[in-house]
Every structure is written in structure tokens, then in C-alpha cells.
Image 1 (tube, rainbow, N blue to C red):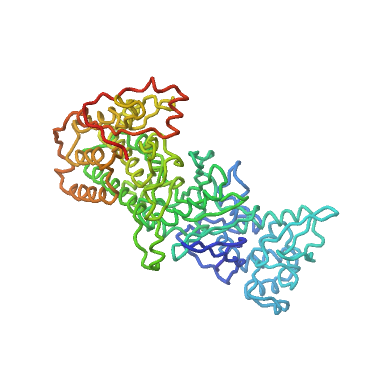
Image 2: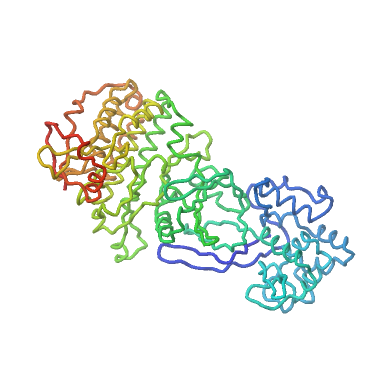
Length: 625
């Protein structure tokens, strides 16, 4: 049997269109079609429930929802109803009411009956029969099933309407005529019928074959087929995430999750901190374009939905973010484990490749020349350990995968303007904020992501060579008072210009250069980590100046490609080596520029000019653009 879930509407979203499709009501066939590897033998049996169909339904609803004292009252996945209902059960239930079961069975299981000739399309009554059993009204079954005026499964959900004289009535959608089958029902019976129908009409989330994202609009009374795993949502700067267990018969993401090598079972429901439709559409737009089907290291949006005027997103749930992975799961990585070393190298290379896809979208041959010219180039805008997730792999022997998530600050722009976004409108990540956010005339480009990814890579190498303790110590060492008046662990300093009181010097913090030296001299440092540290310092953590900028993601990917390939040579990634380097003081090159208007206001408001150091280095100072 197949059942299409009765929800008000479904929207299939493609790159340039949104299609709203009405969902057909449930349609059962004569025999259940068992799909997925669900353990059907675990279902309770009719005889074990006192040969009571109502008790069997309640037991199945409770089990399906993993019912607890704090959860809702349960729901029944449509395939379970398909599986447990049978001619024998229907016959037995009707005989207990002293009625003739043959006409009802003929209608329900064979689609024939004297009053069906004027009904349009195939009509089914399995949900109706279950509802009558749950509310204790099977004695009235012949007024519903086979009665040309009675509701079928295709009429559900029925709408509850209050009467002027008090009480309720149940109506078909888009109709105002009272149904005679409910004429002698008490209000509490009508209310129970109304409430139980939603518990039997839970949605089934289904991916589109063409990889477009489905958007579901749910009725306020609709019950969603999951139960929370954690009592409190995980709060972030721009939204909250709740981990839920979705019943395996209420989604068809099994193959998709296996295709992106992510373990199944738990999902993440993201809600924006403020119900901002424009922000929601913006983030979803990025997630449609850049996702796990595009690249393994980008998070996969499975679906979006709206209920109670609150739009939300569904993702596969990660085990944790990388920050927690470093701290809780692997606080002291074993650098003698060559498989772990190569896995870390693969993750770092994969993340750069994912960012390169965001920065340089591959050409879509299905687009016209004019549409190609409109191709958008993006940046993530919020790379940090909290936004990089660790997923366990479906292969339990593997170490899993690091995946870039949270495109809440992402932005797209056409090729002509992709590097010219002014910094006055930028929202930034405090610790990883690049210097151009505070430089007058600074623009926010894809180089923003290169800086933040460089910060991440450096902290990652602290963890990899020195464990969580070194990573935390580095954060403490670089924490200083900023022009905001607060302590911050950003990676650059602002100093007074000894030659001009209207300009400032922007440069990498000495503590950052010191940790790079410390890692180069670490007894666990190999040629691979030497090369990685050089790339971070020379190509990524640069204050942009005239004639000198950060390398592009494409250039950095080529380097990481070579480094990752060289890791096949055990000496390259495992043999400990030393590398001579000039002192940090000789490598510290400042950039001269003016503070942004916002920065100047902070200096004045917080009386910070007297707190800033004066630049004394003998090294040349470059001019900020």
C-alpha cells in the first residue's frame, strides 16, 4: 500500500522558480508494500493488545514517538497503519459491534460498493476506520464507509468549526455543509476525532529526484513525526538548533545520507533567532546552491518547512562542532598515527576545496550565455570552529568528516562587484575578524574567508601538535584589549603610527607569530606541518596592502592538493624535522591606513588612543589600499 501524506501544500524550489503542488490525500492499496529495512517484527500484535484495534493503534503511536512524560501524545507513521490493518481485524472489530462486516470490507479492501459510483477517483477509508476505533465510534461505521455523504481518507483533515450556539462541527475543507454522520456526536467526541486525525496524518519527508529542495507548509495543528533528543536547543548567534529523532518511516533520506557518507537517524532543526523571512530566504538560497551534494565538506539542507508562521530548516545532525571535537572527542591527537595524520590533511584540503566552490561556482552548462553572465560568486563570511561540524561516517571504521555549515552571513555578488563590498555593512565573527573590517575604505571580498580559514587552520595545528591545552593557551596568549574597550582574541593588532597621528598601523599580533614559531620548533613538526604553517603565515594571515594580498582559494587549493598528495610519502607527513626561519620580529610587516569611521568612534568613546602601542619596528611599512 502507498500513502501520500495529507499536508496543505508542497513547494518544490528550483534555482529560478517555486512550484506549489497540492498534496493528494491518503491512498491505500490492498496489500502493504514494505519499504526500507525497518524492523516490522517489532510492531505489537493485535492479539497482544486484547484483540482491540484501538489499543493496538495507541500502542503503536506511543512506540513511534518514543513517548515520554514530556513528549506529545504520539503519532502513527502512515506505513505502520498500512502494515497493521487487515481484513481479519476489520471483520473482528465490526462483528464485535453486531454489524455485518461484508459491505465494509468490500468497500475498504476491494473498492466496491453500491454508493461509490458517484465518487470521483479512488476513495479509501483506512484512516477513517482507525479514527472511529480510536474515538470509540465503530458502531457508526456504516454511516462513514460506503456512505456517499460520509468522509473518506481523501477528505482529511476535516476542519473544526465552532457553532454560534456553542459546540463544534467538523467540515470538509472548502465546504460549509454539515455532514450527517456527525449529527449526534458529542462535542468531546468531535474534538477527539479532530485531534486524532492529526496524529494519523503525519508527513513523510521525501527528497526530490532532481535534487531540488522541498518546502512544506504545515497546518498549525499538524504533528511533526519526531521527538527531541535534547531538552534545550543549542543557541547560536543567529539561530538555534534542536536535535530530533525522525521516525525512519517518516522520511526517505536514507539513500541520500548514505550517498554523502553521513550516519542516519538524528536530524537538526534550525530556527532563526528572529523570524526574518528575508534572512531565511537568503540562507536557504545559499544552501540550495552550496550543499553536500555539491561537495562533501558543505552541509546538506534536506528540506525547509513552515508552521505557526515560523520557517525552519532540516539538516542531518552532526555529532558536534569541531571545537567540541577537539576538546571532548580527541583532546590529545596521536601524531604517530599515520591514518589520523592523513585524515586531518584530507579534511583541511577538502574544506579549502569546498570554499573554492563557494568562491568560484562551476559553470552550469544548462544555463544560457546571459544567465552565465549573471552567475553569482559567494563568500561564507562566518568560518569558525563552531560553524564547522563533525559528522560520523556511515562507515564506523572511518574518522568522519568536517563539514562547513551556517551560511547565515554568506553573501553572493556578481563577478564585476565581488570584491567591492564596503566594510561598513559587515557583520563579523569577533575572534576571526580580518583587519579590513576596521580599515577606512576596506572592502569585504572573498579574501575575508581566506583570513578566517587561516585562523582556523592555525588553531587546528595548535590542537594537532599540542592538543586542546595548547589551543586554549594560544587563545589566552593573544587576548588583549581592543579599541572596543573589551578583551578580544583577534589575530591582528592596531598600533599608533609614529610618523602620522592620523593613520594607524595594522599588523599580525606578535603572539600569533610566536605560536607559529613555537609550532615550527615543536618536536612533532614534520615537513607537512612546516609547509602548512608557511602557507598560513605567507598566504593567508596577511593584512591586505597595495601590491600584496592574500592568495585565492584556487591558489591555496593547489598547494593543499600537493601537500595532501605528498602525505602518501610517509617521510613527508611523519618524520620530525626542523626548519630554519628568521625571527618573528623580522617577519612582522605593518600596513599603514586610517581607521574606519566606526573604529574612530570606538577609539574616542573608549579613550583608547592612550592605550594603544606605538609602532616601533624597523621593518618597512606597506600602504593599505
